[in-house]
Length: 276
Image 1 (cartoon, rainbow, N blue to C red):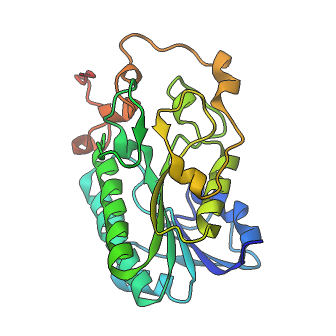
Image 2: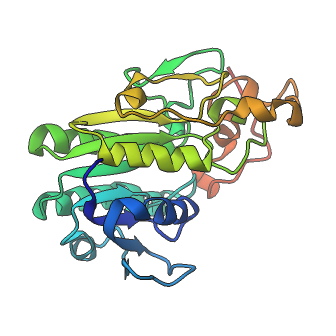
Image 3: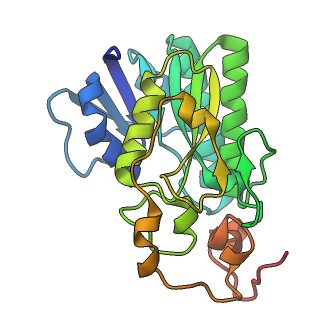
């Protein structure tokens, strides 16, 4: 059995996925420090503590990281929007996190990246983690930056990171795109557990996806972690409406995110049309 984590930090703990991990990772850590810029929906319980933290505040991040042994980083801007919150949460914030991890001796981070890092590959292509990034949004570009920062801190300072390019992590697939990208809640928690407990991960980029026959991503790295997803979007295929011929999902793996524009706060401009 893998060794228990002494004190696990989960950033972004008030968010939807952070809340899943708060419950799902509890058996694997002696104590959990929860952090977010927002308050928790449920107060900290036995074995938990909460620290509110703005990731752009270097001193606050250092205090947040002090005394933890391992980090699951889910914090920061989580979708396309204006540049300022992306800058603060995902660019300044990722530097602050790794600088604090180095200062306080943290040896492993599991980093929430995004499948949208490769969203400008076509839906007729199979993508692997050794292929070049093609971010489909400013948000996705910030996640690509985070992957590069984590690579630097591994090769320069030895901090191990598993970058998880999370797919569509919802309770059940609801669109044709999800037939390729769906990540069930149970498989998500299991993948993060594997990333925390696997030996000698170095710097690794993996796709977070369930066992979907239609998936667009080839991912031997996840298998190296011991991740074997149990759920499949194929079980829901007959319940999902077909795509229209003009749907952006027919063209790019990023789907509708490609239509969202950071210059108008992540909204879809009325004159936007997919192009390829």
